[in-house]
Image (cartoon, rainbow, N blue to C red):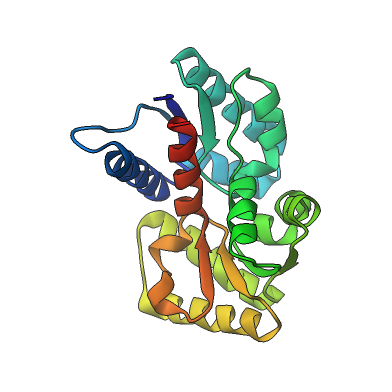
Amino acid sequence: MKTIGLIGGMSWESTTSYYQIINQGIKQKLGGLHSAKVVLVSIDFAEIEQLQRAGDWTQMAEILIDAAKSLEAAGADFFLICTNTMHKVATQVEQAVSIPLLHIANATGEELIENNITKVGLLGTKFTMQQDFYKHRLRDKYDLEVFTPNLDEQDIIHQVIYQELCLGKVKQNSREQYINIIQNLTDIGSQGIILGCTEIGLLINHSNSNTALFDTTFIHAQAAIKEALS
């Protein structure tokens, strides 16, 4: 079994989901007392959030590079950045170490193609919904048509992520707002919805929507299991 490296803490609420899904998956695959070989470096998300607001992606890249180097030194065979937004600096981080990065958008794109999805709605932070680092990978590499909510809806999604989900708060009113936004994306042609922030799965799941939901936390963790056992 390969050792999985995790850069977590962004936020830790979703990092616990990664750890749980990965270990449950390894146990299911191998049985008995098996669990995953994991090295985790957990970042202080308050520092990252401040740098995000300041637009200092260079400093954020340095923080994640240091974390990736720590994972490599600790014996990780490959690594994951346990957040969608911070994949904005994924290329710089990956180039700083010799172990490969398992990219969350690649894992998601492959899952969408496997499910015959060609038009998809994207929920996430404003950085993920508005900037090109994530959407372009899905479009260019997987030929997907990507829809995003309108600006008012993006404000709602972003606020719920940072002010509620990252703090472990799950509110029914916010769930209903997300469900309405998902329906709006479905109405304009989305065949499925990417839950493109690793916390959104804490709020929304398949029981909440008739539209196919693709939880990036689960997809990314499943890809890590597959790689660890390859």
